[in-house]
Image (cartoon, rainbow, N blue to C red; front, side, top):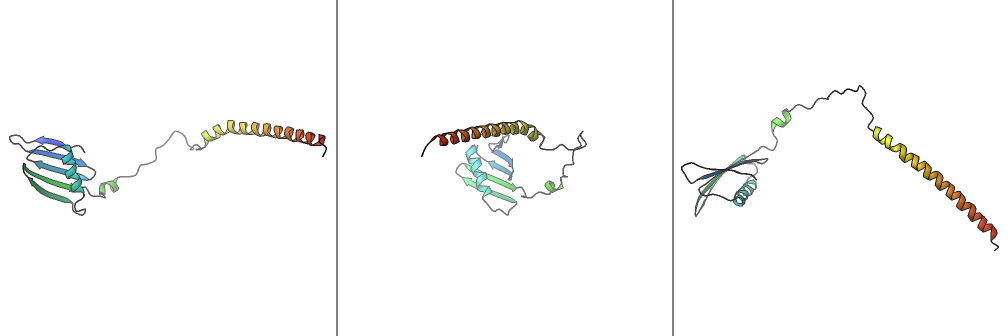
Length: 141
């Protein structure tokens, strides 16, 4: 997560803000916090009471105090539903083209190859059958 860090003028306090898909977190600390600690705080807050819209708290430690405010973003927002669906965009053609135009053009060489292969296979089959009959006729059992 990317936090915006600010040091308060004329004091040793730091503020950290992050806004993401889960909501916004505002942290005030008397000492500078590392990225791992900030990520850990947010992870703990995300696991807190799911139904609460806002979570406030304070943690005291040997170097000072960390205060936090976590405002969860609503899971379903009304503004998503308020968006109008896209309208059809007019095109220069009056009649829509068939989706298989490209397929039809690619099919011609394939079908031509299949026809040539089938004809070659049929000729080879006839020659093989003819030579088999001749060899069978020459044998005395």
